Image (tube, rainbow, N blue to C red; front, side, top):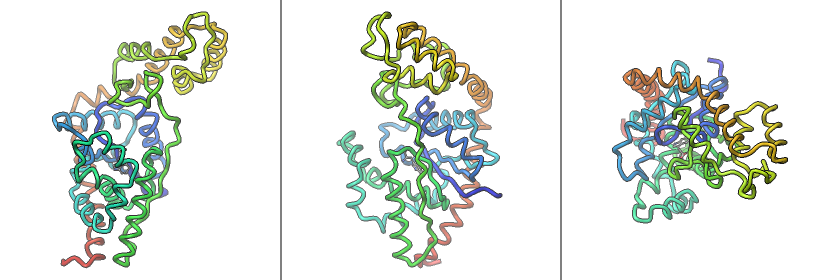
Length: 329
Ligand code: TRP
């Protein structure tokens, strides 16, 4: 293959994906397939660091895989798999943990935030989360990792761990990954304030029906200063307008910008237009998703085949890693 190199990214199995996932990550995953050999992983083990129950883990994995496939991840080309299906990652995690200073882990902003969120469950795995993430990446010798800017500390951490490992064992088997920040503006939820997320229930799911989508769009918070229909609006602070910029034509965006400012269009009509455009945009995705969902076994087969290919690469790396350390054969 004449592609530029290998990309790896992972996401926790959060079930049906929403517009934030789509604009922030999935679209980028799809585009990268053009120029790179891509490996996309559903990180179920990482999910265990925060989950209270695993009841929905399998279903959420399946739903996310459906969304990835329907959006355009091509399993004939890219590798798409479930993290726990490649147990080598846990071996590498253990090995890398020996070159990781504990203080570095507990200093990470991502750890501190999680510790604040779940003070009753600051488990060992949570502390080691970035080590497992490093193992994910370096197990496949990926050069490039597309992630949101919130993951920057983890990527820098991964690079440091790779350097420590290579220095400690005087080797170069592990490769320092580079980050490819997805520079999409933060997608705000229907509350108009917070980042779109499932846990805040301010999201719009890609797989919902047109009617459900319309209802969610109609609930969106707009410019709080525009209280009456006759008040002029400020598109620049309105989240409905932000989404118009993504899903509506440039002409329509210009029109809405103008008509919002002069109160020519009300929020209700503006939202109806957005809902219609959003539904039109998502229609091919939804059709493909329904078709895939007709045959769940085929979706699992894709994941299992991905894992098989991933294990081949992973085992090759582990042979080198074990040898570099001097573990007995
Ligand atoms: N930590 C990432 C997140 O919370 C998920 C993740 C796990 C990941 N392993 C990875 C991302 C490897 C990129 C590469 O979003």
